[in-house]
Length: 172
Image (cartoon, rainbow, N blue to C red; front, top):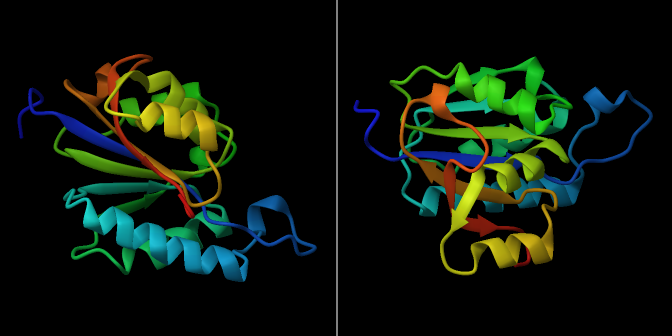
């Protein structure tokens, strides 16, 4: 696979979580979140992007979001549960992306706010259509995702390198 071909990163926030008396890391999805996770999975499948890799936070709500979303995909990508994604800053997420093997062309990162939204804002040097306006207006609610593209190796991911191709959020 050539590093000259555009790569895609999907930044996917976990779906709506419940608030039971457990640690934050152990919070499960709410009923609404289970529905939104499946809907986001259908929307991601509809993009036609052939994902090679999913990097998912180890938190219960992100693992549940991914489990429901990926059921909608025609083919399940390799999944790595990465504890560094939980509560990660945009800079920490870039460090994780920089370690991605170059044979992965298109990846998903399933994580949390404010890191996921911050990373989308930081990476998007340019945007197509009204994607940036929609993302700015809506913020990054539960189950939202942003699709970005860039050229180069994963080691070259840095602020401003990407183009925001699309943005989706439930009820948009």
